[in-house]
Structure formats: structure tokens, C-alpha cells
Image 1 (tube, one colour):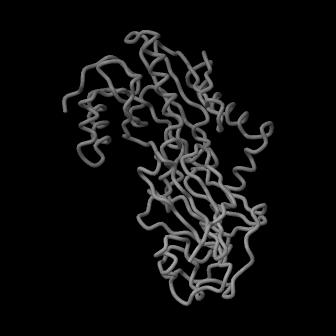
Image 2: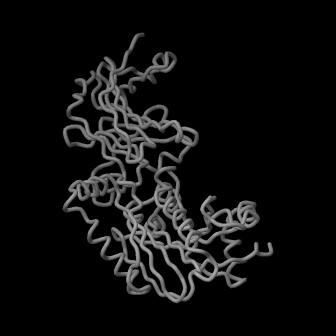
Length: 371
């Protein structure tokens, strides 16, 4: 059996951590999401059958699998037993989820396949195809659910399409309103912004870092990180995901304890965290630790927390009806980070010990706490 597939479409996600590809030979067409070389160390390729171009086999296409080529779907699972016409590459389009971990394939503006983002984190990922009428024999391709108001899969697709349409216009996108809302929230608590730095490296989405000074403390808080929901969170939190998938990051430093150079170096470290979830297809949350070369000795990492906050009243607005979590980045020592990694939820335990010793979000010079 000979089969040389043609690539009809190839499109990376926003940070090129994943690549959507549609391939077609004379027998069948498939939709794939491949990880980049770096992402491939953690994640596997996902696939979704699209259509047979010839009469389907009665059973699972073992012969094709044995030869390492794309199998046809068994005839009992597809709505075109005699085969369907080949796909026209010009009619294909990919819509990535805002998290950048899943994608929907459109054909002539109709949904023909969905590889959901949460499937990236499963040992045996599943996908949904419009031309599939029964689960495939291997269980990896499923029928597309009916379009109903409460259908989570297609509702997610509709949300993704609307999201990218909203941001497709460089002049009419929501950034100005988001920027003004966040700045006014910060200024209401911390006073006028002193400096404003773009930290998006001229990539979408727009992100910035604003500097404030109040009562001997320098504050840096990001703007725009919360535009994107983080990967992983929907899989981990399901119906509660809206409370955990968006964040902004803050840093508060005592000017009595650190020089201007040290303060700006720590601010650089905060900037590098802003895009981390999407560069690494991961997420950040309460108690997470991140190694950083930007913290002064004896520190060597940051721990993120909203629980450390003390002394200011800063209530974050909603973003796309989701909660925005403001995580303060607090430097920790190597010993503290190792302690946090020794047991499940060790970051929470470390934060409890820090709070017990009156450590707040304001960074001051200190020794490693007793553990």
C-alpha cells in the first residue's frame, strides 16, 4: 500500500509551541496538532480523522497502521460509506483556543473537527469529527456533539472565534479599554503611575509593566497578562476554571532594603514571567515557584501568592467575566524552594510559614526562614 500525503494546511499557534496540520492522501484526510521540538519533551501529537476518500474498511484499518500511514475510519463510524470528495485546501481554516493548546478546524466556514485543549494533558487524547457518527474502534475519534446552548465543546469554539475576531482589528481591539481599566484600578490604590514599560516584545497580546511608588515602596504590576486564559487550568479545575485561569503579576520592594539597580533587576524578572504559561504550555498559580536569575542573593527564585498581600486594598476587575488573580512575586531562597518541592502542595505550606513570620508581599532583605 502506497500513500504519499499532501499537506493542505500548516499553522502554528501564537507562540509556535504547537502546529496544526491537515494532511490528505488518495484514501483519507486527517487533522493533527504536533508539538514543537521543545514542547515535544512534555506533550504528544494529537490527531483527528476528517473523512475517507474511498469506501471505508469493515474493521479497524490495521493494514495502514502496520505500514505507518494514516488509517481510514471503519465504515460503521463514518457518514459516507462510499467515500467523500477530497478536501479543498483553500476552504480550510484553523481557530486556536485563546489558551493556545487546542484548535478547531473549519471547512468553508463550517466546523468539521475539534481537538480540544484539555486533550493535550490526557494519556489517550480524543478528538471530534463532524463526519464521524459513532466512536472509532480505538475510541480516539468521536462524533461531534449537537450544537446546543449548553454544549461545552462547541460553546468553547464559538468563544474562541469571537475572541480572535475581536482582536483582529489593530485599531478597534479592546486593548485601550483594558489598559485604562487596569491602570485606573492600580492608580486608585497606589497613586499616579511613575513609569510604564511595554513587555510584549511587539507580539500579541499587548502587555505592559507599570511602576508606582508609595510610602517607601516601589510597586510593579503587569497589564494585559490576563487577556489570555492560561493553559492546563480548564483541565485541572473544570467548572471552577474561571476563578484560576487569568492573572496579573505584582512586585513590591522596599526602597530601604534594595538599590535601584536591584529593584529594576527584579522587575525584569517579573516581565519574564508574563508570557511563561504560553511559552511553556503551563500555568502559574498560588504557591508556584519559579527559578529566576533576577533576584538578589540570598534569594534564587520567586514564589507567587495573593495571600501574602497586606496593607493595600487593590480589587481587580473582571476579564471576559473571569476573575483576575493578582499574584505577588516574593523572592525565596534555594532552601525555601527545595522545601516547597518536597511534598504535594509544598508551596502552600511554605507560604503559611512565611505568613507566620510576618512576611508580606513587600520584599525586604531577610535570611531563609526556619523550616
